[in-house]
Image (cartoon, rainbow, N blue to C red; front, side, top):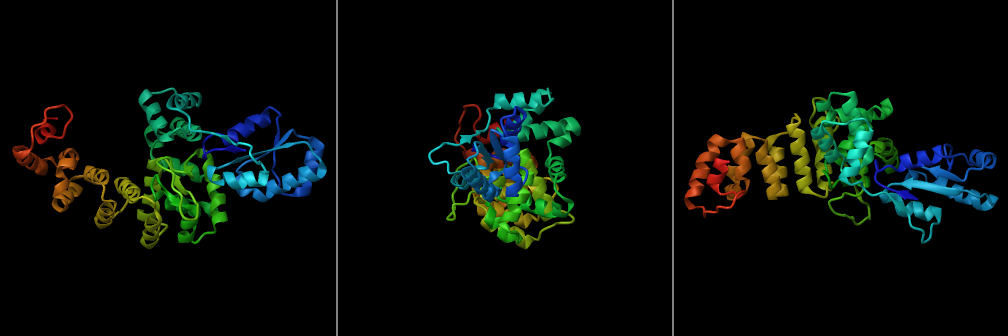
Length: 375
């Protein structure tokens, strides 16, 4: 069993093994056809990709091997959230799966350059940041930079368009809505069954669409920030990178031809695991040109209630800064630097006033009012 996030290289490994005659992919679910092919070709191993959705096929392969005394290995690749189910069908016992971990930055740099993108260095660094250790996503972003305008390729719009071109036309709206649904939850994501319930889709139907979208590495089924297990033991699914989340939420909920209603958005917000992540994502959709009301942004920021969220909100612009200073003057010393950048005319008098009573702190990099103005 090969276990890894979408985009970690599971399918690539299987294809390389097949290219070196170490096994063959199962391309049919018809048991008689599979048995005949194994009897005729006698492969040393059979490969089952995206095995989380092929549990019955795995059970049939195990049964076929046992009843025909055939000598072949079964190699299954799956997402981390499907590991236990696949292991049970494979009857692995105490055998350990091969887990593909995210690559380190230097390795991702090599992946990007091997994909044909040698520079500039700032562009490579930006791709490495967005890929977050996943070679599949790194290759996708590098390819887009080579095929499209470099500036546009790193925006969520181009990545979204690239993803959806592999989806059947009749499934595109569902695929975009599904991705946007998970995107609402930000990096922490939302559980699959919860998004399926809100969108009125069957989990199996949703999983099939997600599997088609997974190769590029834009889907993760266990957030890296921290492990979260709900009462149903269902890991949240998240969409990455953040720029893709912003574009999806903007178009599906706040675009000129929005696919989903604000009522559905409210339901998804209630199912998300992090209010701060929701606020950050909707702010991103707003900055990306979405028709998001100030009232919604303010409600989400106050619901999150943490200082980092207020900093992000103040950094958007003058109007957001003035609202924050009016309703939450107590956090001025914390958001002062961001407020100064967004609304200097209004903020400078406040900084000067604060400097009268502020303690003098002389080490470089502090937030003492006069230092903010000086910088």
